[in-house]
Image (spheres, rainbow, N blue to C red):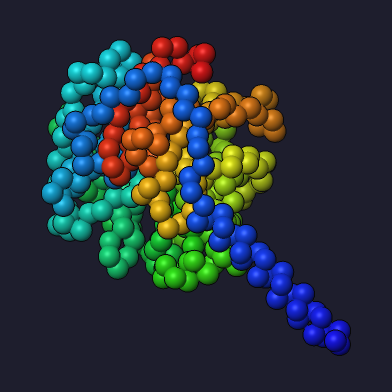
Length: 355
């Protein structure tokens, strides 16, 4: 056997082995999760048809839940002050979408509330940026949130071909936001080839008010992100490599890598409170059964200001018997408000400090 044939056989065997191992990871059954149950979970009947996306504003002390009822998208306000005491008798108020002629093509997949001005002096404006996936394109719809009038006033539609396939959005400042795009191709069969051959074409994009630029390329399926304006850090959840990348976003909008957090789960939602990072994730992580994957919640507590060391709690608030693919997670004084495309529930915790 000549040396050229040996090289080709070795290369072919390496590719075959890599693809086989990668396929086995994605078709595996969901592993058993230790079901630590910190408290009872109560389903919210208001969202019996599931929730499309949830966004929270601690400045306004409210959350917005987008959900579909008989193919119509409805938006409700969740007052977070009530969740600090009791979720049993929570009252939801519906928002009315105004000044938008194309509202019948509204399918939100991610949203973010951005507040400008002084809340104490009642001189502020609240904007809601919604990532809207239509059949032929993906756009960003910008609304003004008027709480006193219970209205979402549509301001503009931002369209760019690079938005297609994006899955999450976070606003940096008015008119400027970042997006995650897990795949280069929009065709699902070509996406499978991307994954099987371990070709990372995922991107972190930024819209600067005029054009879209790529902040980071070659990512393994980025599907979720969280931007912390206090520290200028971006936490990026990667579905296929099952990890969270941490970056510092400089004032000139360049990224400085800080660290990588391996969590052995595919993150679907990332949020933060004053000291911890909370992650909703799917342990199975394969690409063909997102709707049947179990989900759980992880807490990541950083042990230094440089976020170079951390502790990840055990899996708890396991949702394997309730739903899959968490798309909304809100931490309250005594529990979690958890949402998915199937349902929504509030899980009580006697003492969150002990978790």
